[in-house]
Image (cartoon, rainbow, N blue to C red):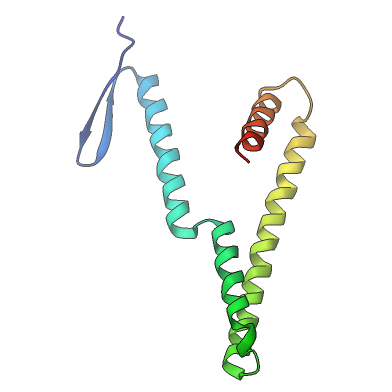
Length: 123
């Protein structure tokens, strides 16, 4: 039985040669990568957006007395508030997931602790 797979490219689409399960796994993996790239290009990083908007707002602080800058500053401030609300929603959802799957001896718990440890080591 052949367990090794070969991959080739046909018109930009990755073709994986192997059994049906191998193809499904490869297609799901490719779909995950494509969705991640799409999300990054369409929405960007919220942290980067927050930094950019905050810097722009700081630059405008000196010119806030002009009506044009006041309107733009209010719009930027609203955008920053909206981004923070989205960030809070994600934190709450993460907390809900943690409390429901929590400190049980689950794969979720182990992966979460490993991810947190790696993140802390990187700081």
